[in-house]
Image 1: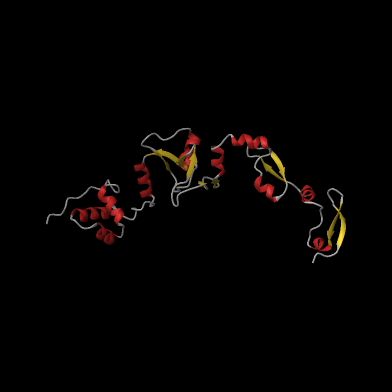
Image 2: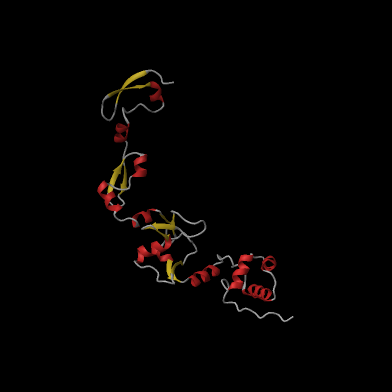
Length: 231
């Protein structure tokens, strides 16, 4: 129920306005407008993301949207693109924790960022911003940590794909990590003796794709291929 219509005095602008007893009972009808309400409410002080100067903000919506103290700072920050936009999509965990990329990514894989119409791995772009260099041909940006979405520069290093695969196997993150060198030797022996890849996969508790990679030398290439058993 709206209740009886009454006239009140706005505590901000001191102008009379019409309201109802129902609105007053619900805790409303105190101010004549939203402008007077926000003007009376205590402001929240934020820091400008460009100049780092404090500035007052009124209201929850403004608190969520405002990042700059003025349009001049907003325009200046826009000139820093795409680096500025990139770091806005990064969540920095406290201490020595990872800096997680919150933008586009392939599920279970690295983040992706588009710079000058080119798709670049997010961790590689973070390394380029921090160090000012890109990997030479044959090299790539690898992780010291075990977090594909991490873009923290001191968690990254320039290395090769072979070094990356060795790190993955050492940390148990590689798909072939459940195999051991002894099992790989058994797989190679069975392959040399003509056993089918599907049969080997079933017996060794792995996949046919893994067995195929071992046969082609794409995985476990450091294990010596044994000679076939004479019949």
